[in-house]
Image (cartoon, rainbow, N blue to C red; front, side):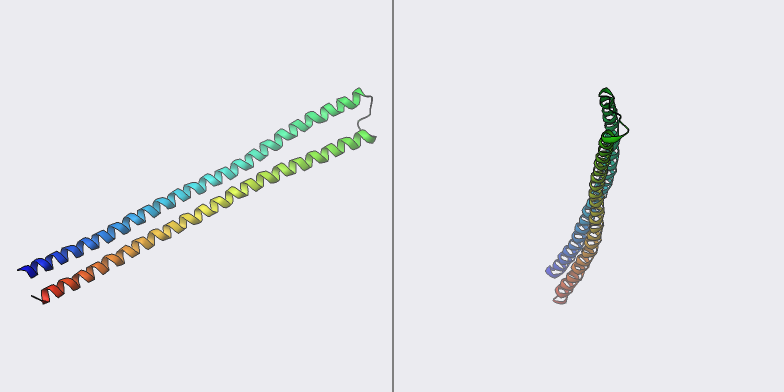
Length: 167
């Protein structure tokens, strides 16, 4: 009488091991898929931040151009107040140098904005790579749980057969 009970307990224990392994794998898979979704969201945020950096750079350039135009106007007024012809000689050279400085400043603003945007785009790429890695881990957890479950079934079948053979 004890042997059939032992065999039944071994079979039930085997079934529980199987279900536990499958459940653990399923939950690990779900956690990895959740992490992948978080990484995808982070990638989208980084892409938006990159676009925002480009936009900010454009607004800074526009603001600088407006300020430079005000400066050029003030410069022209100062030359006129001093009875200096602004289109020739030293006054013209001063204006040309100011324009070159402004062009350099604009190029630096644009380059900084592009550099910042590239950093965020790179972050987005890395986040997407991490999302893919989490999906890979999810598949591995699912596969591993199947193997653990099947191993539990085989081990339990072996124990049950051993117990019943002793009967």
